[in-house]
Each structure stands twice: as C-alpha cells, then as structure tokens.
Image (cartoon, rainbow over all chains, first blue to last red; front, side, top):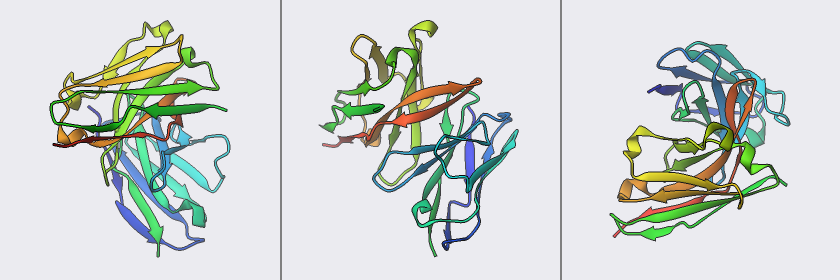
Amino acid sequence: DIQMTQSPSSLSASVGDRVTITCRASQSISSYLNWYQQKPGKAPKFLIYAASSLQTGVPSRFSGSGSGTDFTLTISSLQPEDFATYYCQQSYSLFTFGPGTKVDIK
Amino acid sequence: EVQLVESGGGLVQPGGSLRLSCAASGFTFSDHYMDWVRQAPGKGLEWVGRTRNKANSYTTEYAASLKGRFTISRDDSKNSLDLQMNSLKTEDTAVYYCARVHSSSGYYYMDVWGKGTTVTVSS
C-alpha cells in the first residue's frame, strides 16, 4: 500500500501570508496526486488533481506542484476563507489520503 | 444540481450491522465510479472503498483494514449506492461520506461529496 505523509501537521498564518504544505508518498506516484480542503463540520472540497491542475472555480491563489514522491500545495495570499484542513490524496493505486494539515489563524 | 445525500446512520452495538445509502441526482450516476470515505471524530479522512461502473463490470475495491466486513453495492436504476457494514467495532465510529469519482485524462479524483451520515458504534 502507498502511504502518504504531510508536513507540517498544523500551521498558524495571517491573512495575506504565503502558505506551503508538503505531501510525500512512500513510493513514486508520478503526478497522481489530489488536494482537498475541509472546514469543520463540512464535507471535503476538491481543489487540485494531477498534482497541479486546478478544479474549475478554485481561486488561482491555490497552486500545486511536484511529481514522483514529493508534492506541495501553495496558497499565495491566504484569505479568511482559507483557514481549514488540507489533505493530499494519491490516486496512483486506488486512493489514500494524507493525515492532513490544519491551517489556522495566527 | 449535482447532489449526493447519505442516509442510514445511527447508533449500533458492537458486533452489529448497519446499511448506509447514498442517493445521487443531477448527473448520470451509471457513468461514474462511486466511493465511500469515512472520518472518525477528530481524525483525518480514510478511504473505505469503491464500486466501478457497468463498463468496468461493477467491480469493487476495499481498504485492506476493513478485512471483508464492508460491502459496497449500487443500483443504477435507482441512482443509489449502498454500504453494508457488518461486525461493527467501536473504531468504525465515524462520519461516512459518499463521493463521486471523476476522471480526466486518466487522473481520478473525488469531485462531488455528500454531507455525510454519522455512525456510532457503542454499547
């Protein structure tokens, strides 16, 4: 099975900050990497697929990069509505989620 | 409007069974793979399993950790998805989500999610 890790597990940031979250796979998954956002009490929201392709309607301040085993999600200028938990997910072999990164207000 | 609505959650004793359902609307259900995902209280997301579409013989896949206790089925005539859960354990307590699987250029992702239904396993 492919295992996913994320770092940091949590971070505190201010509105306007640039935020970067890292995701690592236990083996190469090429670009088969998705990102989701989840707010408390809500279902996850799909953001990015194929490591860097933005879902329609997702703000352009979100971007993804990476391939192989190492990936990043970047929020270029954090907005109030971006405070949430972010999960990466490999789709190379079925699905596996990372443990999540909580982004909260500094 | 594309929508998924889960139902069937509730309180069940350890060792018991429960059947969850997911009603789909607003899209061609039969075209899509459908997945279940769960989230234990205060924990992260855990992929539970998948049913593929008719073109892929309705084959199913499950997380290894479930060890055969869960079964996913679908009824394309009713646009519905089910999750039969047997031999439930306290650690199965979670919010259970159904999600539509979409593919683009060979990349799969969950683009539509239901709001979830809560399962509590407790004596």
